[in-house]
Length: 136
Image 1 (cartoon, rainbow, N blue to C red):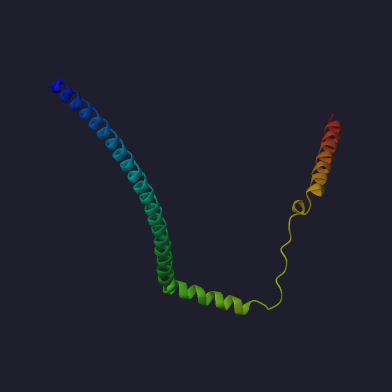
Image 2: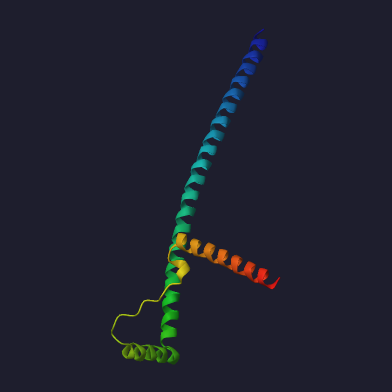
């Protein structure tokens, strides 16, 4: 009987050890999942920070390129001649206020222009009818 009791004790110990091992493995897996989730969140934040930094650097590079191109263009003889011509035109221009540019009649008021268009169309129809009637 002692042997049978020993075997039963061993089976019970093995079973409780297996249950404990499974619980610990599950706990370990849950902790690894949580660590991975935290790491993913940290990496996403780091990635978005890097993208923002790259965007800022691209803007700085673009501004520097524009400045370099502007300096290159403004340093050309053609540009200097053009600026001299502008200065001459500005000196020749009278100092009085510029005359206003007249706007076409149809831009003044929409309702007024619609009436004019309808009236023109009516006049055109009536004059074409009279010509046709006069010819017949």
